Length: 578
Image (cartoon, rainbow, N blue to C red):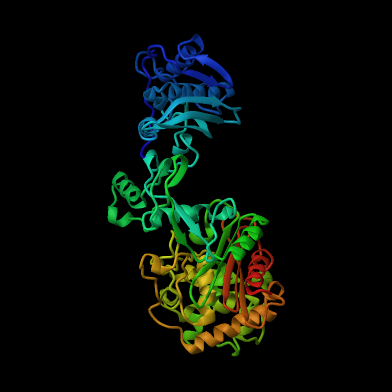
């Protein structure tokens, strides 16, 4: 947003008569009445206290009083409602950014006859309701929504001002986003499940961002006709990175973002467009089951896919953010699937050979331990995997190069190359090259390793079949796009031993309780990932049954076997008909 500054208001200017009325705190005030003038008088006195006309005043500090919060909020809302953008912007701590956004509210979004009603203050935060009319080329529709602002002390003089954020204008606006009314950037899309049924957010609440993404990518290709709408045009990450680089004096190339542009969001439809049809790979029964399971668990996300093809059959989240496809979380011990493939590949482990699992193992100056400090004396690598022994992996770090795990993840499992094309925006996992203790930690899914349920469902699917099949939501035949592939195949030795490890874990290891009754063609791995600032770790679970693979995470869920495990197992059972 750039440096925050305060613009002093030196004149308590008044304008001609306006037909607009101010509704603040539920009381309507004529714009030119004494109440409104008093608001600006109070604000003007504070703003001009440091204009050099008198002795310098000390900068105010300390907590804001209720009166200061109400006065600052009222000054801002009153000026915004009257359309005096400069005054409204001056009542914030970033006048330049506020003026740009508030000008766009009228000129780009075409919102007229605005009424702002202040709600009940809560500390330094003041909610308010926005009512207006969106008018574009003879078509009008009413608009109502709620937003909020926070009052802070200005850095310059300590006077109360509104802390500027794009979300003040609309709660869904983020940095660099714009409100625009006009012909829709893309025609609407009627997204269909694999059986031809329509996918709607009413039926499947988790699919909101997915449906937005499908429209963004396939609206024109699906053959629809655009309507007129008020929408949020999302910022281009590359452009925002360029701005940040320019402001900080760094090279733009060094800060260039690899993120995809988020899908625009429709807020109000003034005239309907004609939707095109787009068939996806989602299974209606599995998607419904996934929605039901995550809705019953806070901060849960899950994905189900078909290992033989890569088709995504279900994806659901209990929060509005699409963690299932776009999350970036440490996967904990589920990453041991990839680490095991690496150790077997290099001859450092074998399923039925004795493998060390001490209570503690040190590397790079860090001391690692197992859950409850357990140890397995004289046990096999299969026993260590099934019980999720951390030290069995840490003890092998000294035999690996810093980039060993990165190469295994990229070349065999297709992770971390930012080249998946599933049909909507996704995060493809990250396994960065690390050294010393963080390299060892990455072997157990900590350090810099980051994944989401889509990535981990793909990992267990690759372990099951031995071949990486990039997951996809929209068949590649729709737009002739090329799916990502792995640069080298998994050897038969690695594949057979990975299957053995995962099957044993599902039958007699940490995943046994959740996977009970789903065998024999099954395999699973549990995980828990420590996160700074969380009392409970994130719980992970990934498994396959037949030609279904699934992975789930419950943030702050504790052990994966108890939190994410029942969700994944239920979906595997539902998808396999038993």
